[in-house]
Length: 260
Image (cartoon, rainbow, N blue to C red; front, top):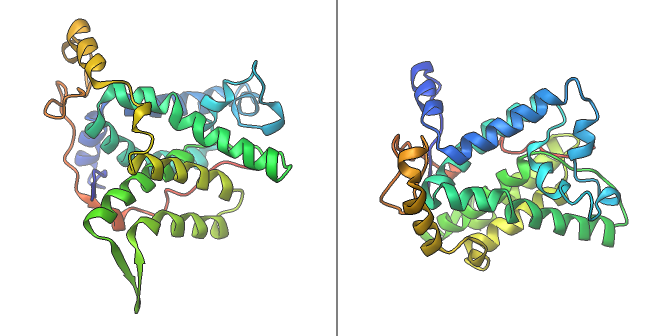
């Protein structure tokens, strides 16, 4: 399977950024805006992080804010570079409305709830987590399932491994090489990505019939620049970039996350 990735050529990189679809733009903007806002308001990071013993009915918003909150500038940049091509590809395939509904809802809350159950309920710990790497591994796992259907195995020397295990190898390597990363948090994101890729939780997406009605009723294609229709044959006024980078060539920088 292929990914659309920025070319290092400045002109092509600028063109790529200018043509990013709408939901991808919104998520990247929110992540940057929260980081900027956390400079004068230093406690903002703490208030948005997923801290197990501070999650209650009144603070349930943490289950939605932790993926777009980061520990610092380099944590932010690494995650944005890693997630942008994955997110752009997902939106180009599923549409802006589907992407926005999933990433503002179940793709954030489900990994968060699983993390709380494991960290608080089983391990009796209280390790805070934050960062878009939960989405990086969710999307990598989804792509790995698609790749596995076309190419079931990849070679490691004389051995063969199932293609769907690729994100698990990256998660393990990341946990050893990069400090303050959450192995459990990454695995929770990967688990939801696998479930989505195997069509077990596709019911979480809004019904396509309703989305098509909304698009026609509100004339979203004409009104919203960079909007991607749920109709696979329609990619908005500005289009989306073709996909070109295979899963095996994804940079391992998709790894930074959360924690500490």
